[in-house]
Length: 203
Image (cartoon, rainbow, N blue to C red; front, side, top):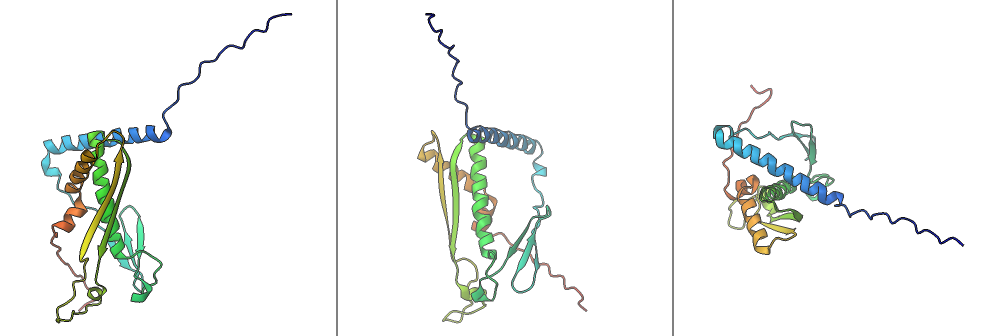
């Protein structure tokens, strides 16, 4: 009886990096390279650093709704709560403000992380605030002074993690990111706002 010949042993493939980790590393390298290119150009030509930001245009849509438009076609509808006369089906302008604050901070932190070669595994930024509704309605307090319509205070909570990074280095990363983040800086340093009013069909 013939001795059975064992089947040839095929080499086992080495485990490949997951699509997410490969994509994350590639994105990080791409961001770091882009930031380095821009930094190099601005060091040679600091005069081109000052530029006009993309304008945001809000058009009244009836009721208390406003349609905010970007030049690239992006549109966002905002409204107020039903208690204030709105429809309550869309986010409020105040929420858009907090979203811009949080997303700007997250973006700046991610940029610094990429530039430093720190691969983030998680990053979440939450912006909260407290406001007095009497200010929105033009009311005065018990002493007769107008109630401030803006947020009384704001809080920013950052959750961040990165493999191989210490808690101290990640806190320093967050601090550096916020120091370079435009919207948090605009809020903290109260940017002056000029007003231009154009009355259509006026005398």
